[in-house]
Image (cartoon, rainbow over all chains, first blue to last red; front, side):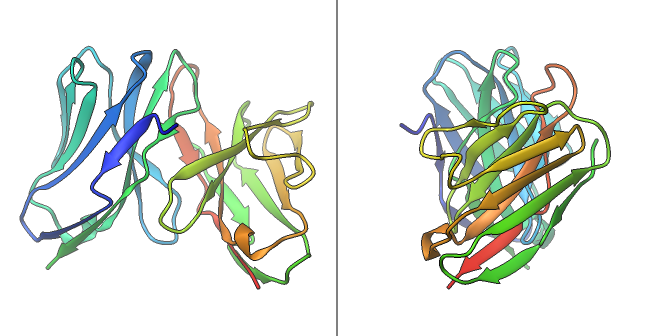
Length: 112
Length: 115
């Protein structure tokens, strides 16, 4: 049973546009929600993360929006750049566990 | 943060053979993990590599197929045994740093193609 559902599977955005990736979770015990970014030929790397006590976290052009009641969270990439082209994974973990549950990933292509 | 080196970065293997992937970390870590990433798929945890004891395998993965060694706090190996084309995948080593950090650092991965 997939506990973290991620959409869309792929996304094409023009340079300067906004990229939005959505995730939904089922387990209310999750208390840490990271996003990982993976470039071709590289391993995933932590991009940004949020805990459920806040509704939004922003780091540069990247923002996580979190809706605890709806059990949803999303990644917004403002002013998307070709260098942002990568696969993005949302994830969720609980109670100090180092083992997150990953979404299926979103392949983002930003056209110049 | 930790730096993880994985070898080989890629390999092409024949059906029925076995391949061992090495993972070296530049600092001592308690928890090391092995993941599989199939084309277009998510990151699937194979096992947690425990130093000084047997690895803990996730549902669907068994020690006979994916034996793991963890001889010390900086090194681990994953062997993919008796390979079939279905084993073609990227295998990723990962470590967790810091108490309660919930953050994983990944190696660059080993891309295996089984013919």
